[in-house]
Image (cartoon, rainbow, N blue to C red; front, top):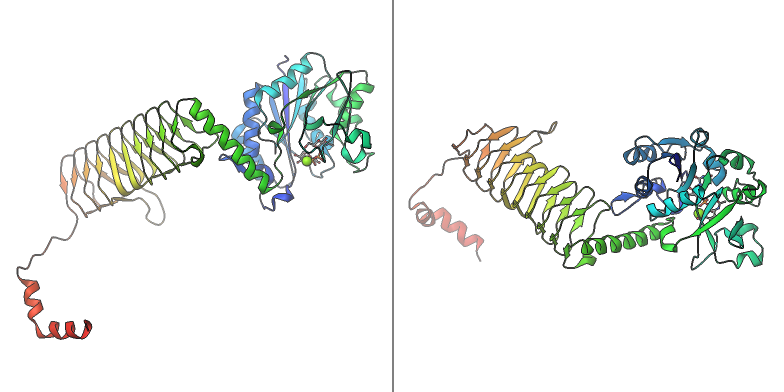
Amino acid sequence: MGNRSLTIVLAAGEGTRMRSLRPKVLHEIAGRSLIGHVLDSVAQAGPGAVAVVVGPGHDAVAAEVKRYAADAMVCVQRERLGTAHAVLAARAAIARDLDDIVIVYGDTPFVRPQTLRRLRQAIAADAAVVVLGFRPRDPTGYGRLITQEGRLIAIREEKEASAEERSIGLCNAGLMAITGRHALAILERIDNNNVKGEFYLTDAVAIARAMGLAAVALEVEEDEVRGINTKAQLAEAEAVMQRERRAAALEAGVTLIAPETVFLAADTVLGRDVVIEPNVVFGPGVVIEDEAVIHAFSHLEGAHVGKGASVGPFARLRPGTRIGAKARIGNFVEVKAAAIEAGAKANHLAYIGDARVGEGANVGAGTITCNYDGAAKHHTDIGKGAFIGSNSALVAPVTIGDGAYVGSGSVITHDVPADALAVGRARQVLKEGWASRARQRPSAKRKHETTVK
Ligand code: UD1
Ligand code: MG
């Protein structure tokens, strides 16, 4: 196979049927944008250059592209004049010396790396144009692949097809590969003399043949080339992807007690013997190491959970969380941008944000790190083996030294040295017999009689 490859991702569509202000390819399944899925497959398929064709004003798409393919060329198609016109928006990339050019759609997120490799292999095996075909349950609207003795002769768009051609079950999925050597010559010959008045990329097949070059079709299952055009299709695609991810997790040795209630992100990493209880949601960027348990109804995003740690039930881990080995995060505890070191515990009702909780430290119920002063975020540092009494407010920036104690109900505004005790609350007042004396007072009696009746 050649090693000078270019992949062009067509993503200039507005996606009007989504009824959304967002460009279509930025909608997400399994916590990843449609174009992110496509670019991830492209990257896995092997090395090569990437060009993405976007619509005017789609700066957000360009930014998303850079997250997956930092060196990608982003080309703007100013007018939507057809799929061939869209490909030529990447002319600067095509004009380089290339072995093959693979064209994919940004709204077709299930395409597998091995399929992209198959397209490239067919070019290496001497085809000038390779088209990906499939047999849809309902072929309406798709271009039909016209073949003869295993050779691809032409692609006929439905609008131009004869009744006989429309009865062909093999359709164009839209993915195509073209040999680098003839790509520009082929693409530049495509015109717009057709029913829609568009430059059809599909004409590349007949043109290549007229130039004496070979065209072939490869076939894949319909599910792989499922395109997303509506919110209903997006929801369906989400369900399909969730089923795939859960099956892969089970296969890898993860215990999912009720798999259908667990939502995984495309990049979720789950170690061996991890247990995920029912109704857990994973946002992007989560890694769970071996033997950790995520209890029911927890929500995790951008978090790393160490070996044998326990999270939840009803815990929320937000981006920048690192939970150390065997640490425990209990019910109604929220953690954000914080490191909870090995063996540390926050078992009930707490907010730990912009903080470090040292090894083996204990954070009592109701503890809050007051990280935000209305303008900026500040850090709280809790030392190894420290003990934070229940219902304490730690006003950041503040440091609690190793082994220090904070009395319950404290508001801590100054650093606490190692092994010290800090109590920051009003001293308790005690008045012996006060309550019975109060009950004897006439005023109290009268008040009592008027309110109780
Ligand atoms: C196209 C194919 C058809 C195939 C079908 C598969 C052509 C002429 N027809 O038809 O054979 O069966 O896809 O789904 O290629 N795009 C641009 N700029 C444009 C036009 C399109 O970026 O000017 C992008 C769209 O955003 C989309 C893709 O190219 O991602 C396909 O365009 P679309 O208009 O959906 O083509 P179809 O008519 O469905
Ligand atoms: Mg289409």
